[in-house]
Amino acid sequence: SKITGKARITHYDAALNSARERQLMIENDIREGLEREEFDVWYQPIVDAHSQTMIGVEALARWPRRPDGELKPDDFIPIAETSGLIYALGQFVLRRACSDLQQIDTLKLSVNISPAQFRDPEFEDKVARVLETCLFPAHRLQLEVTETYVLENPERARSAIANLKALGTAVALDDFGTGYSSIGYLRRFNFDTIKIDKSLAGLVDDDVQASALVSGTIRIASALGMQVVAEGVENEKQMKLLRQAGCEQLQGYYFSPPLPLNEILQLPIWRKR
Ligand code: C2E
Ligand code: CA
Ligand code: CA
Ligand code: CA
Image 1: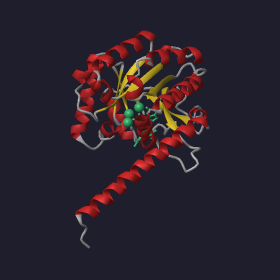
Image 2: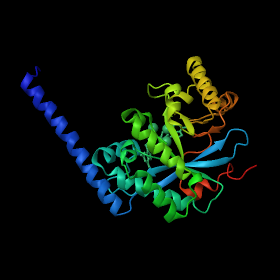
Image 3: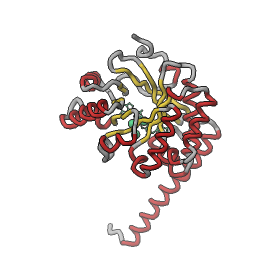
Image 4: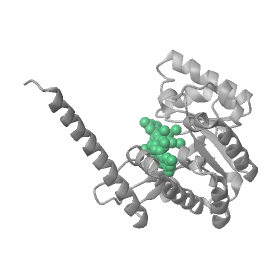
């Protein structure tokens, strides 16, 4: 049947409204979920490529106790960001992760930070306060930020990164290879670490161009004194190719998915030498 222009607009409005309604509903759920302690933090190992032992973990938010069913971070983080709830959620993740990892003093901790959080002029002070309260040594903490953040306000990014480094905390560029910036541009922000995105690292075993891009990135980053972590390592072949390309740190399902802390500490890669 023919849809008139007017009917189509009405239909479009309805779809927009229901997307907006869903967004508001989830926003409300996040707010209540934070109050009711429905969120958890899980950890994924970051492994030394040569010894194949766990040297650190990345903290990842989980929402298992949501009454309407679990949502994945890709579904709730963007809504937390647009609603401003990312401040509370981000603080929760940072605090929980620092207190969980406090006792395990040989593991480094990497925590994701949304551009919105990093934009907060008091962000560095908040990090310093969490470190103090949790008695967590600053040098064991790394914060992961994406390119979006540095591009929207390079001045603020530079000073925030400098302030964090003055605290002793490392800063990593997350999801490298998904944006548009070259490593030459990004080096000016003094990242300690570059994380090669899984969409790129996962291609090393079947795409010559991706593979060349990955090994080039690893070479340049190492020459500039930055550490490189490859994400999304799913099989032995990828692991070996990335190690051969000079990547010192690896992360992915090949080693372990994100898990609750106690399960991470049962893995053979933990303290296996
Ligand atoms: P990310 O920071 O790039 O985190 C890595 C994501 O890749 C995680 O998804 C992890 O489970 C997944 N992953 C790990 N290894 C593999 C692999 O071998 N293959 C594949 N296909 N995937 C792998 P997750 O936990 O669903 O998180 C998705 C995104 O949500 C994260 O991407 C991050 O951007 C965001 N996120 C998660 N937790 C937080 C948080 O506490 N704060 C902020 N701001 N963002 C978070
Ligand atoms: Ca990350
Ligand atoms: Ca990433
Ligand atoms: Ca990501």
